[in-house]
Length: 304
Image 1: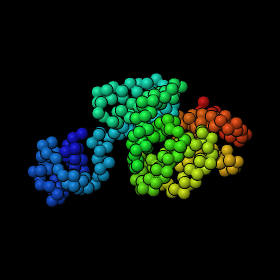
Image 2: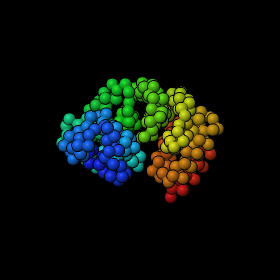
Image 3: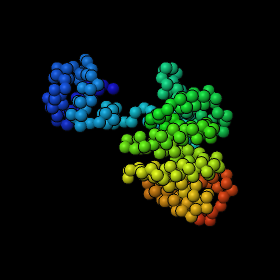
Image 4: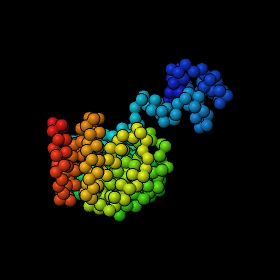
C-alpha cells in the first residue's frame, strides 16, 4: 500500500491545503517527499496527518486498500460462509488458494494458520479424521496467547470443534476477562461476545447445560451497543435453546425472536444453519416441543 499517495488523494478530495494538513507537524518539503514515496514520516507525525484529515487509522487503511477489507478478513468471511452453507467445493477452492500462498510464503504465519483452519474444516465437513499437525499448530498458538484480538477470536470461532471441553472452559475464562476491555471498540462487532456465543453453542452440543447456563448469565450481564444486531441475535438464539431445554417458557420466545430477525434481514444461510443446529440439538437431547416443531415447520416453509 502506498500510504503517501493515499494521504495525498484524501487531502485533495477533501480540499484540505498542505499547510492545513501539515500544521507545523512536518515541513512542506518533507510532506512532498512522503507523498512521492521518497521518505517516511515518524509514527507520531503520520498519526497527526491523519488527525488533520479527520480520518481514523482503521478508516485510512480501508481507503488505502481501495475500500476493500484486508486479506485476512476477506478470506475469513469466505471461510465462514462456506462453513455455514457446508459448501465443500468452495471450501476446497479456498483451501487450495491459501495453501498456494502458504507455500510461496513459508514464513507467513497468517497463511499457515488459515491453511490449518481450512484443512480442519474440510476434515469436519467430510467426516474425516482431523489433521493432527494442523490441530497442534492452532492449539499451541491459541493456548499461549493471554490476550486475544480480532485475529485470535476469528481462528477460535472457526475451529472450536478441535478443542476438548476442558480447553474450551479455559478459553472461556480468558475471553470473559477481555469482554469489558473491548466494550467500546466494536469495529468488528464485539469479538469476545461472539466467541462466548460460539462457546455457548459448543456447551449445548456437548450436553453440558450447567456450563451453558453460566455462559448465558455472563452474556446477560453485558450491555451490547444498539447497532450490534448480529450479537443480539446470537444471544437470543442460543439462550433460547438453553432456556427451552431447561423447561423455561421464555426459551421458545427467544428462539422465535432470533428467527424473525434473520428472516427480516433475509439471512437465509444463517436460517438454514440455525434450523439444522436446532434439529441436531433435539436429537442429542431426545427433546420435543410442539411449539418449536411448529416454528421450524413455518420457518422451512418461508425458506422455500
